[in-house]
Length: 396
Image 1 (cartoon, rainbow, N blue to C red):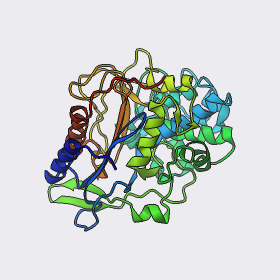
Image 2: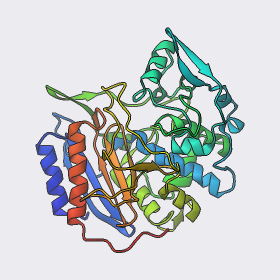
Image 3: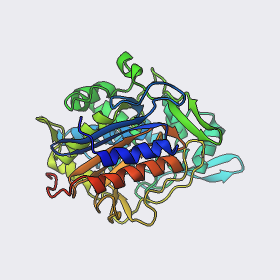
Image 4: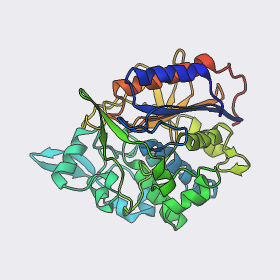
């Protein structure tokens, strides 16, 4: 297992400072693993040390894999980015645009245009999250519908559009619908499609929508930060949902996710397994929202997450799966780098210019709390300080 001492020292310091209970870090290039390390504990107060094969709840790190699943169908000519979602999933046609409140009663109107697969992939559909949208959080309370993480089809109508498709970028449940599009076109449940088309070919044997007994033995506890220290939360998703939402449903290891990132660095192929063609890889790397920009989002449910704002002041766009920073971050990633995160503070980025990708896996709430941000920044800065300068740009 390769390990770079400077990166490990930076993360050991973060654990010692109380920024996180434990973490796993992986750094890769197109050719292999450059660094892999584990730090701290799997559970606060426990005896089990974190190990590099520890298993985490990926939550929104699932989204990029869901987007790649859809692009597999695009590459095969079975799906177009400009297909109307309602033509594939008739139930989607019932969604209206939320248009404000009359007292406690919500108002709705028809959308100005159909939502397309492209809108779902770029988070320009009008669908939002209740965690970062106060109106949507109130709608959930008013309707009494289960939240999307419960895996119930009854959740879907409770998430209307909040703006006309294509009008702006706002993070939301779009990728859960995208997974249903994949199921309808492929004619099978998404979990089987992922295993056959992505997870299996990439050798991601510790990634699945449910915890196998082997994965359960390596599972990391979820923690909440508080004034009295860390407490452990029950945050597992239901094992038998109506559908596995591609916005959140996967669990996996840092090493597995690094293999997924290497596939993208290598232009859609890894160890002889071709996952995506060059056009789809370009769509994953390039700005796909034109003049729109990724904007900050205030928290509506602070117990789950603070406001979303990566790299304040830096211009950010969105590709078909990732946030893209349009400017370099001094001491960190280059302009044109892509990445995202999961709500339990699992983080990753891909830097095509440097030919590098990194993963930092933690399990703590709230999202982007001060400790998690400090640990992640320390990790990325250590990578660029201690990994020799890369001169080979990954294949397009």
